[in-house]
Length: 360
Image 1: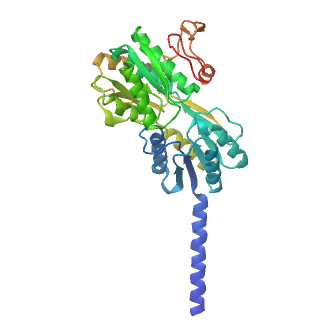
Image 2: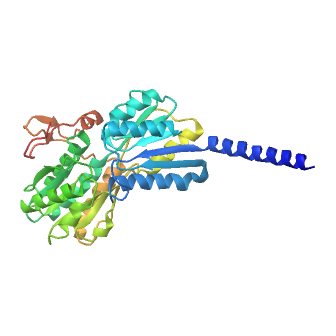
């Protein structure tokens, strides 16, 4: 009797172990690599909100894991390799500088799906790319900036001289100038995605130049914190709403909403329908959202900005519509002509009216 009880218990234990193993095998593992901390209040924070949305959407069907503060370069390749070895089914690499590392590791792990944010290299069939049309949001912010500046000097804190960032500078300036022909733009290159001290120093330098409106393409709230010390200056949330600085100096924001994309791509892995894609959505697709325009902005300016947002969403307006010339005065877009995606994805020039050089 005792032996039979032991055998029965062993069989039950084995059954439970096998069942647990089967459940673990059925569970999809989605992994995320972040360039900054999840508490940056900007870019990485917003990607992490996408991870949390995946957890909420799938519950126990999906296991998620992430690593924050991963430098671009050799460290990224090491982290991606460890993730692939740990059983990740899909890995989201959420910064431009992870591009080569993503493709290098993907070559060694053909059964793992890799999704690279803001890049353009898809060297292997298990690599997809995704981006957002941030320049659409910057057209809206540029309109507010051009209307709100009293000094006619707006500033832009840029991260790295890649097409995504140059698109943003150009879109901001074009639309500020449309509503205020006297406006100028000063660009400070921070050469970082996330470094609050550098970002604060850049904001200080612009304020000292007489700039009273600052846009930024870096990841922390440091520029807004610096503007908060200087009455009469305003700025915008970048990547996240940065609502703690409302109603001023943060008068609106560009919000990156990655949740729908992450949920869709994890579902494709679960369904076995995942395939290589190159996604580039904007306001219409919901990946770019315009945060609340606060009461610090006059009603007529708010209405103008919202009308532009709605026209972009409807497809009746493109932020890069001619006539537009390049910085050196050579024609780029004729009257009514809009920029192709190819032109935008390879953008390496300023438009006419912007002074200074783009670093090489």
